Image (cartoon, rainbow, N blue to C red; front, side, top):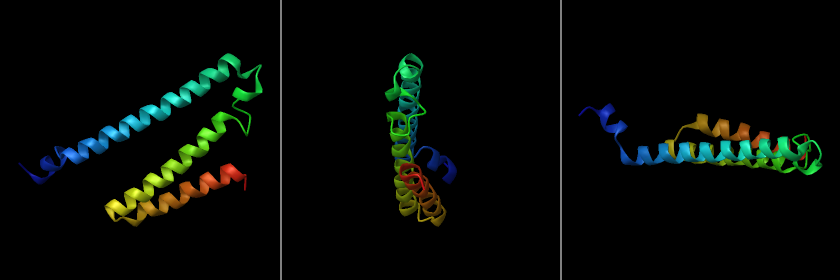
Length: 102
């Protein structure tokens, strides 16, 4: 078995991939739920409006920016690659900018 084949079948890599796909599915499902709530009640009810800066959809977006930054920091520590730290700083800036409206 070559090194590349060994890496493909590494259990920790498969667990990481399963976690990543699960997290992606969860985030997309939450986005679709918020869009569905907007379509059902958003036109008449300001709480579910996607245009509301203090609404749940905007707060969920802040959470996604922050989670992306945290995961990128962990990835930069684990992989010892500074490029992920740079991306983490960018996503942290997006989270702060979006939440306090710089």
